[in-house]
Length: 216
Image 1 (spheres, rainbow, N blue to C red):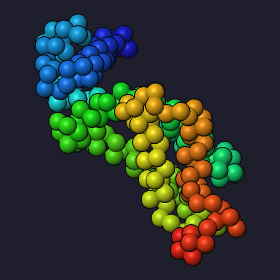
Image 2: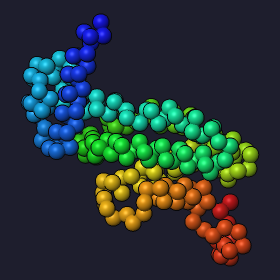
Image 3: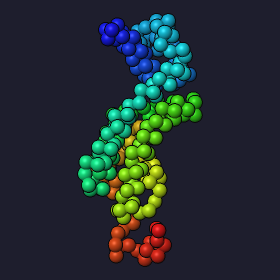
Image 4: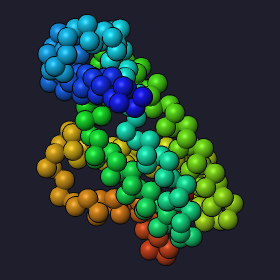
C-alpha cells in the first residue's frame, strides 16, 4: 500500500517544488500551468490530477508549513531551563534557524502579498500563530506573576519578539544581504537583550529624563 502511494506523493512534491521556483523566478502571473508542468516533468493532465488551478498550487505551497517543527518544540525550549533569559535565547535561536533555513518562504510571501493581499500565507500562518500564542503567552504570564517581567500583555510580548526575529531575517537575508556587520549569534543575543531589557541604561546610570518619564 505504501509503495502504491509513493508515486502520487512524489509527483505532487515535484509539482510544488517546480511551482515555487517558477513563482520566484517569473512571478505569479508570469508562470503558466504549462511552465510548471515542464519544470516538474509531468503532463498538464498530471498537474490537474493534483491541483485544480495555479492558485491552489500556491495555497498548497503555504500549507506545507515549514515552521511547524520549531512551533512544536517551543514548550520544551521554554521549560528545559529555569533561567528566563536563557529560555528566550533558546527560543530565539531555534526560530532564527528555521527562518533562515526557509528564507524562500518569505520571497513567496511577497508574491502572495502582491497578488492576493497575503490571503494564502495568512491562512497558513494562522495555525502557527495560534499555537505559538497558546504556548508562549502562558509562559510569559507566569513570569509576569512571578515579578520577572513587567506587567504587559503577554500576547503583545510574543508579537514583539516574533516581529524582531522575522524582521531581522528579512532585512539581513532578503532585502540587504551582506549589509549587516554583525555575526548571527551577536545579532540574536542583542535582539534578545533588547527584548528583555530595552535600550535605556539600567539602574543609576539611567538619565534623569528617562527615570522621570518612567515606563510604567
